[in-house]
Image (cartoon, rainbow, N blue to C red; front, side, top):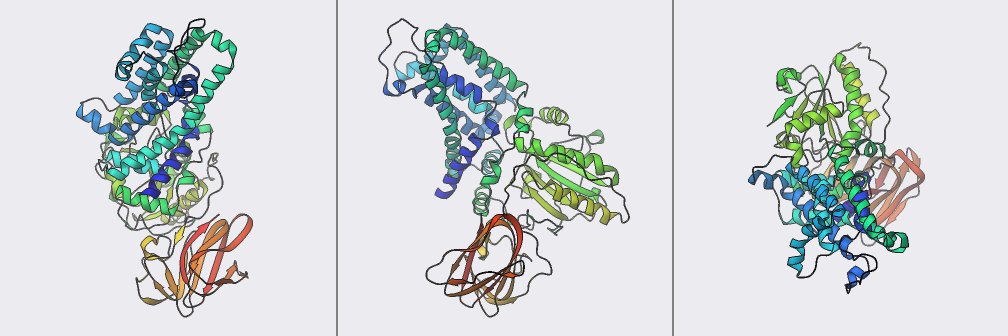
Length: 572
């Protein structure tokens, strides 16, 4: 659990420096630069506490309120509003209203004092800027729109499916603290700037009034989703940095994801694979963009190529991927492609069907949308991410899976291949040309060899536990997968080489590392060219197998002497 808490904190920090902070960034800056409870120029200053003298009191109050309301929303938002019989979007509306009230408090000092009075009574001292800052932080926590990465997605699923446990609470708190750190720095910077500019000190009342105007303007802008286009134009990088195989394994345990043919299927393959039959759409609340709102079924779509796209409308990563999905729908619908957007909500306000309908239209989504409020289809597919795409052939089998942003050209190529497989001789239009805003730098995922975390063996399921078995390489090896040949004894954490042991790996990386143990030699060749042999001895440790000047695809063949233990590939 400690490792997952650390990952949660790092993931929160990454989210706090990503485009998802854009709507609240001006508010945090204003919060640090204004002190509603400060004395007017020319009046006696009360004795300041150490934190207040250091300029930390109000920023800490703002961030404390943000952490509290954000964590409660993630873990218990849906449950709270259900118990109170409130509309599902009431939390977001309350946050906007609270931000408006705080802004008015900046403009009207008596109202500001009234807002701070309940907190001042609790603290048994006169009202100050910190108590008002806590109210502002409560509003920001509700309005904070985080980036959809593996860690936050897992936390949200835990809350939405009412599986909150102690680990989920700790991971959520770690994420909230991590994402608050950069916001605290911004707030403190605003306060330092205000104290160092003498003109601001002399005009403190006007500065507070200007801050109130900013808060009110930001509340209105957030209410009308004015930041959406700007967020879409700035690529996000936080999700890619959270997605190692070790993190995914821990999150699987947190969310209770079952290990099935879909969870075992590679999301990095660049060619068609067979992941098994596609599950049907289950427990759908409503269908949008279908004739009369009638439901679709996988069985009813036989003969068609189907792309199932999991998304949610406040997810910025999903919004960046939607133009690609919509372009495929426009280009290939007449040739037999059916796109189904499964809208599985992150937050309470995304449970409202009218909100989904409105936002789908605003985002240009014209293909069928299944509103998956109860996570029935999400769980049927054992899904973990927003966005996630499952490509299904005309026979109803899942042939390709993709998580997160990017790899659009691969997905489109496979869509075209399945369409032509279904209708031989079909003449397709040219490939679509939608700009890809996903940042570069993708690497092969961490790849374990022991059966406890074995994910990328081809063929999957061929390994035999705790027994020496002779294997054969597959005819073709997908990128990101490995194959075994010769004799191997696969254990929980490692595989021990026997007679004629070989391992083949398709990788995308600049550097390839491998944890090895035992004693012996590993002979390495890259794309058929021999490399320096690796002498293995001593305790298990990390060995460097390959280094290049830039990331590239390659095929690595290892010839492993008997007794050497192979644990875990990592990539740089």
